[in-house]
Image 1 (cartoon, rainbow, N blue to C red):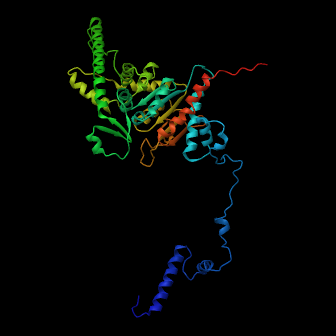
Image 2: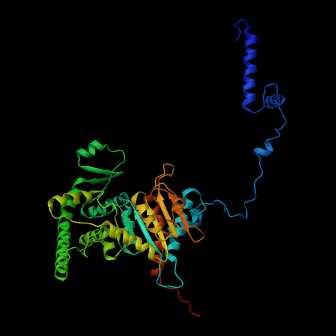
Image 3: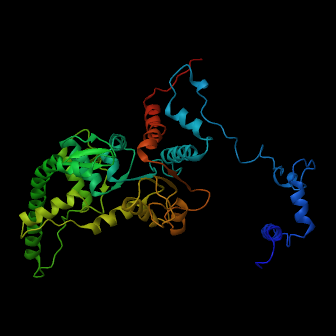
Amino acid sequence: MDPHVTRPERALALSTNAQNWAARDAGLGHASDSRFFSLVKMGEQGATDEPQTFQSTVLKPSVDLTDSSYPRVRGVDFNDHQDAPISAESLVEGMAKSGFQATSVAAAVRIIDNMIQWRDPSDPHARTLILLGYTSNLVSSGLREVIRYLVQHRHVSAIVTTAGGVEEDIIKCLGSTHLGAFNLSGAALREDGLNRIGNLLVPNNNYVKFEEWVHPIFDRLLEEQETARTKAFDANRSSSDDLDYQSPFVWTPSTVVARLGAELNNNESILTWASRNSIPIFCPALTDGSLGDMLWSHSYKAAPRELTIDLVRDIRKINDLAMRASRAGMIILGGGVVKHHVANACLMRDGAEHAVYINTAQEFDGSDAGARPDEAVSWGKIKSGSDAESVKVFAEATVVFPMIVAATFVKHDRLKQKPHDTKSD
């Protein structure tokens, strides 16, 4: 700006420039545009004329939703439950139209109910194949008792979990897990021999007990394996000069887990009840945990012999279960390998009819844990069309899954035990 311009002239020029920029931002062109000055005038104190755009923007009329497919939002009214304790199913029913994740929880209950109730008109014995997947931290938590209930009462057909989901169940039978806090010092806990899982504490002595318990079982598994191989070798040698053979007796992750459950023989154990009820527990990442540490150390103690565990037979077993099922449903708590392994088995049958995901992961990073059910539809892991139903509940499983189980599986158990009403004429 010219230094010889007086201060009042400079102020006027700056004011005009500011008006020009404001007008340009408003899409009105130059500040001399009459529309700009009319807007300025409308904003002046004392203006009484309502802007013409107010009715069409702020007070824009709505379509009528009264008779639409969008129900009215309404939550739980505890005034309706003053005379008796509210049941889990009544609570969830009241949450159905609350919105947000409450509505998703109610959807999960509806889908699981449909899994339980489905019947094939052409085959009265056919039921939905219910595949349950869960991560190890949930077994460390109190959700273990909820999962054990499902297995004890044969509510699930098969399970997929991690190595931690196996070993934590065993370890809880050998020692206690304790409530701690999320903010405890890691260095101080290490000094005290305490392992932290979120706000849970697992004494390291529990893993020492686990090693002492599991190594003799590995020894017996190895002996049984070697005995079976020797018998197969002798049988082949006596019948043929061809010494190539495959032993009919091979350990797999699921048969190892079943054996551990039988050896444990504890009524509080998920593994024990799965073994008793012939519910396979698949563990595709069997070595990724303390179990892997124990298998590694056992391989040195048993050398040169080696316990062999075959993954291929298990992938065939779970995929065949899915392919032969008349109908399939997935209940997946958490993400990672358990989520993908269950869904991938259902891919072999062109998708599951029912799916319930419960985890807190988001999809923006492209992770399988964060993926919503519709992504699985694109892969053929969940069916599309009107016969399929799925939901993802964005919640921490220990908060919502006990309520979901109470409103579905426990409810159906209670109804089965209740005697049928008889009416006399």
